[in-house]
Length: 197
Image 1: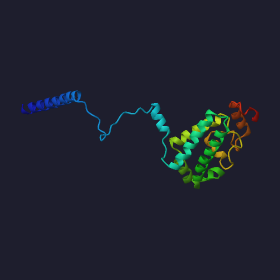
Image 2: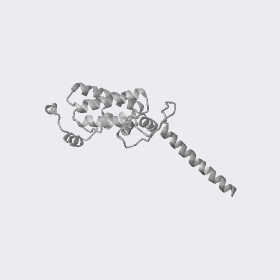
Image 3: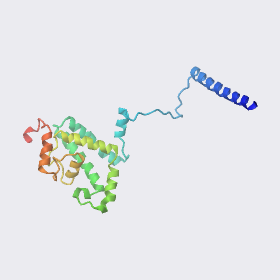
Image 4: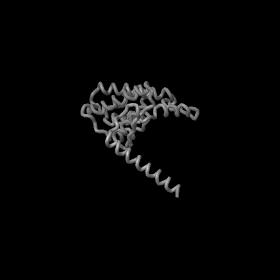
């Protein structure tokens, strides 16, 4: 009987302290304190979260500079594909990005990779495999779909890799002519370049 009374008192005290805390929080609002961390639920499907995820990188300032140069110039070229200054800016940015990628695994440029090059290929994938790198490739693909980029626009040492990154067989010197033609025909000719086609 004594234990039952003790348990009842303990439960009553818990309920009373809960009610008192609720009442106090309603009467006396709690002021935010910058020293106390605050947390909020993040929806992984929200547009802001998706944008933040597409900006995630390995935080290397040199690679991030190369990445953003490509994204910015590719998006600008996609918006104004007849602008030759934007085209030159994009070609320079994409060339620098491709050269940085190939500097990690040079065998990709010469197509001489063997099993001994596996560690270099893995390193290149890690160095250039962030969500921001995927955004770079998406931006490149969109810029190339505008038909602003043509065969011969890129230096020979990077053209094959740029073609791979941008999924653009039209500029790839190793692509089959029929494959190039098929992709070329899917693109709407730019009004400023119809005569050059």
